[in-house]
Image (cartoon, rainbow over all chains, first blue to last red; front, side, top):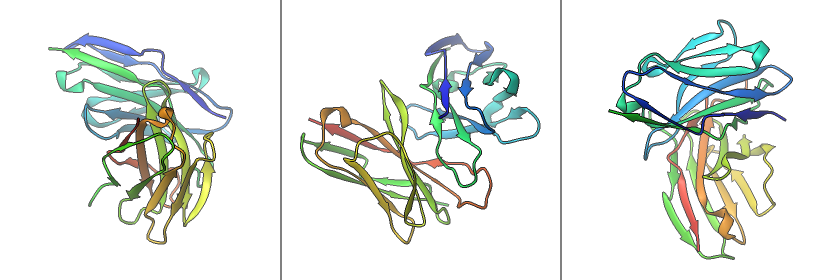
Length: 115
Length: 115
């Protein structure tokens, strides 16, 4: 069974600071990787996803993530955060089996940006 | 294109009662998954339906059940409610198999409070 670890539970940054949120997964096979964001009072939205190919993926709102297979990691980055990035961020993994839609989520990282 | 619609948005039930939650997926999406979100456990996979068949199931007791209709709409049912069932229940829809590595779109959720 797959599992996902997000080591940062709550991160507080000032505007314009750089961001990196850690995500490590445990699974022996091929995986698809996702970062979702949940803004206060809103539904989960996809930030970015990795299926195959270039391990550096770019998502919406200036976010990017790098898949490092040897480290089983998929860290989320943003060079300069804004107050509007305040939200909860979830890393998720999906075992790359045909027709498998199950997502295993990390426990989430709450990001607070101070103006 | 309308998003994933979940009804009702809020529910208050008494211990021992049962509850039914509804999810209408995005038009054309035929896979529907359900997740439970709590502060302590995070997002946990409940089950997934495709073509009216349950294809995948998480580690929840038999009190949690679901079904999918021919129009892809789905319902989940929780019987004999316990206080610990209080949570945000999220529905996600995605394209059918054959479209490799699909992306899940989430609804706003149903907030269930058991008193």
